[in-house]
Length: 139
Image (spheres, rainbow, N blue to C red):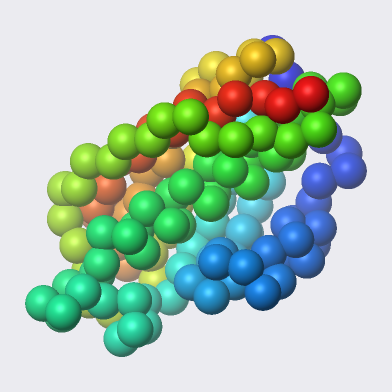
């Protein structure tokens, strides 16, 4: 099982995302610890679907980035990177304003693959999405 790397920090993740999709979404990594990453995103009008509710891609962007950053922070010492080989999301609710949060937790942190789950919650704390992704570790 991979351990949390000391060379990956909240600050290094923020720097890594500059000018990339997570930056455009407004993704903020808030807490990183062994087997877990907490993140949040403020809902803005441009992140809503035409029906006025939170766009599914916004929720997936939050969850996938949280899991991806967590994976990066838990890569084996000799690994170079990772790539997503599968992801799935179940939507249970939505939000129109406020800040949504994601908690990514490691399910399997192996040398060749990692599996991460994320629970995405609305500002009132209700779960709005369950997310799972499988990452291939690259050497």
